[in-house]
Image (cartoon, rainbow, N blue to C red; front, side, top):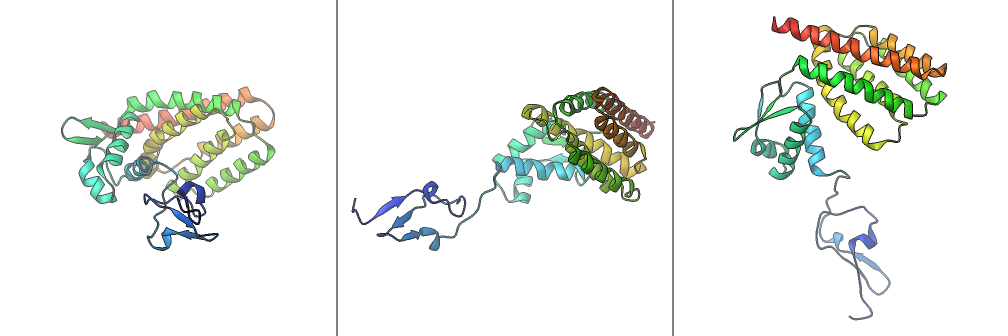
Length: 256
């Protein structure tokens, strides 16, 4: 190789992130860096796998009720709609089926799972137990307690905005457990929070949100500040149990 030239790999340069073009090189001639992206435009990649972005987009449509229970989903039409290939769509749909949001219909694609009281009865005790364990493992500072109180106050002022209030509620619970260093536990929590959020969104759109959440939140924070983790866990379990009972009762009424 001519000593005046040196080929540098993309990873060696990396000044502007990652490019979706291959192969791409840079030439040092003799001391000047020439990037071939001056000739070919670069396309930046997401930090997450494409299937994760596709999964989140489909899930958001389910949560927003744009895709209602019973709606049929096909990978071909979704891929065309999202402007991606079928592979990440198929992977996202299979993940959503495993998480309980979709039902596979052999040879006919997937359908959005119907809201089901049994799923509530199964899921809510699990998320209560996981949150209690994550809260136990998370060091909660006075600064975090202040942030929890601030979110709770914002929730109390959002009575006429049920979906916004529910979004604040989710942030409150995430903040309560974010100090936990058990990655697998947090991953399980994230998956279950998506499940219960679907039920809670449907619930608040129909009935609005009561004052139970903010009252329970305040009591949990007070127990943590008073260094009484057992009391905090007891209130948190009761909080999830009351939510499950309210939602199952409403589902029973809607089917009566």
